Each structure stands twice: as C-alpha cells, then as structure tokens.
Length: 357
Image (cartoon, rainbow, N blue to C red; front, side, top):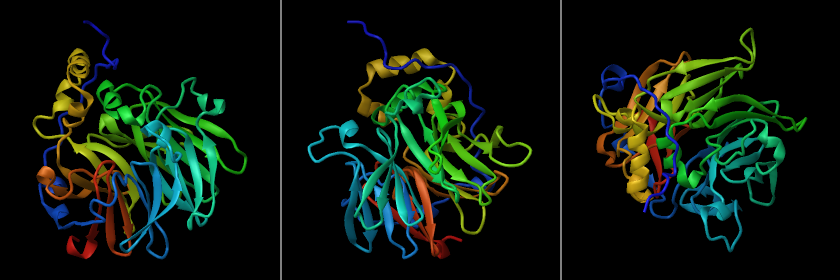
C-alpha cells in the first residue's frame, strides 16, 4: 500500500555545527541540577516566577499550576474536564507575568490571562478568530511570547501546517511556516511582524524594548526584529549557527540572555543537519517510522548557552548524554537560582548559580 508522507520537506543546507571549544567546551555543569517535583509533573515547558519566588508553569495535561516549595496548586486549565486529546485538553507553553496576572500561551487556542491565585481566567487572544489569519494561513501551533511595558504581546506561531502534538513533523519538514505576531491589548490590534520563519518558538524583548528576539529552531539561529530606531520594522540575525536547536530565550539578570537547547547539533556529524539536503529521505522516514520513534531521534544532551547583548556565545552549561538534564526548553532565573523547563521531562530543574559561576 502506497500513501503520501505526512510532510512536504524542503531542501536546505546548514553550516557545519560549531566545535565544542572555547565557551562551548564540553562540561558537565548541568549535572549539579536538582530535579524538583520529580514524577509529580510532566512537561513544564516554560516557567514564570513571582516576586515572592512562586513558580508558575503549564503542564502536558493542560493544567496551569503554581509551585511553592513542594506544594503544587492548580490555578487554571486550557481544556475541559472530559477532554481526551492534547488538542481538546490544550497545551500550555510560554508563560509570563504582567501586571500581577499570568499570561499563558495555549498552543491550540490562543492566549489566556489568569489571576495568580486562580480566581479568574479569560481569553485574551482567540487563535480561532479570523483576524489571526493576516498571513493568509491558519495558525496551528502558538508557542511563546513576551509582553512589553505598554501591554503589547509579541508571540509566535510555529507552524501553519502542523500542530504541537506533531511538532516533529514540522521539525523534519523544516519549512517556512512560522510567524511572529504582535497584539496590542489596549487597541486590540493584531499585526504580522515577520512571516516565513522556520519553526519560530522562543520570544524575548530587549531590556530597553528596542527589539524582540525570536528563536528559529530548525535553522539553529535567532532573529532580531527592531521595534525602535532607524531600523524599526526590519529584522536581521542576532545569533547564527548555534550549537543546538534553540527553544525559549530569557533575559539574564547580569546581562545578556539564556537560551535553552531542545537538542544539540553534534560536531562533526549531526543527523538532522546531514539530512537537510535530502528531503526525500526525511519524507521516507516519516512514512517508515512510527511517530514515537521519530521523537527518539533527538539527542539526549542537555545544553544552555549564554549570549551577550551582541549575540556572542559567552558561556555554556552542559550535560553530555543527558544524565540529569536531557534537554532544556527554557531557563528562568530568580534570586541566584536557575530553573530549567522541559516540554517532556517529569521535573523542574533547579541549579544555584553560585555552584557554577
């Protein structure tokens, strides 16, 4: 029986992955990470931290929770009690605190606003709204966001073709199906800022909000879209040829940015990089292998990189073989402690900065 593959892969080439030397010299600094709440949660992709140190995150079952010590409290939910699939349960991804409320990306439905104590929940952006089709494509995979002081939400749609549940198909297809949007909560105006992005995920405003950074996962680079100054309305590359496929970007308290790597690109051989010029091979893989095996192709290797304000790699924390931290979707910093999110792990990572810097 012949059938079409679930992807329409494109041909592209990646530059050789950077060698693990200098700031990228192989190390095991992530292995000092403490796995907190182990086996009590699954998939804490993104983490926001309140002034009092309370952690807020979304989980793979659609629940949005606060974490104080060992106490987990459900404060919101992206689906409904009788949901039976990820699409109906929803999948909370990027989370941010703005004006004492928690904003949450639901990959399938839009952006939610939840009171920090869980008393109220409302929809801020409904991705089913026709106005979000300004790029003439249906949004299918909202991912991450940041919010300006003026109340403008900058958020990504990773794909107009594949939902989050089938993100590996988007990864292997490697097409330009992603978009960076802005939504002004005062005027209710939504805009397409950049379209044709390759699996855009992490979003982070500059400290002075003069630009917004967007991770372009399947090209191992970070795009910078200018919001102010002579370059306003244009974009360029902030960082290229990263040692892994970047996920969320978050500000570093001492300057620069933390970038979590969903998977690394091994030097001199990286499977996905090597298959970039061979779309038919990638298509055949999706026909031959069940989806769960495709997911297992990702390397188990934890890595976080530190970028300065110019996009240069200044440092890295690693866990070769993923012994303690198999991958990192986000780094949240608070009061001398790093917290590591993951879209699939059954814990939140906790690492004291004084132990490593």
